[in-house]
Length: 178
Image (cartoon, rainbow, N blue to C red; front, top):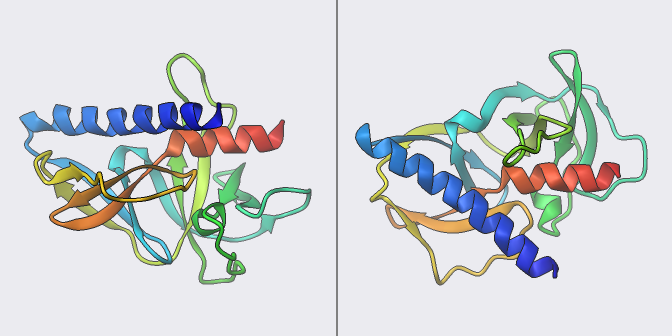
């Protein structure tokens, strides 16, 4: 069912993040980006971030779910712009001149190449690049979450942070386009 498939995707993304953490053990540190959303912070490996941009000219034509804000221009390409908050059931703020987005690499899993290799995600605040050791990132077993863009809840130095599921975000876009 949907839950087992979703669980598999969450496990996959979490494993990928943890593999990067383990690979980083030689260097002792993993370079991560913390994105500020309206109600929480999300984390992802720095290697998945293509660029932070100001959002301009979003084409929101067509019938799409609330979390799919439309397509925006980035380096001559149309890329999907998504809302983390709307995917979690919250209302979406309008896009204005101050809206910032992070462009993420969404390359796909295994030998499946994503049809849309990039996705944009609206941010609420300034992203922070930081380094963590694998000992600082602990699975938060008590956390309840039911959000399609979250792979896992973790605690870093005691603070609750959500691991962003970029692979599932790309799948959500492809399902919308189908």
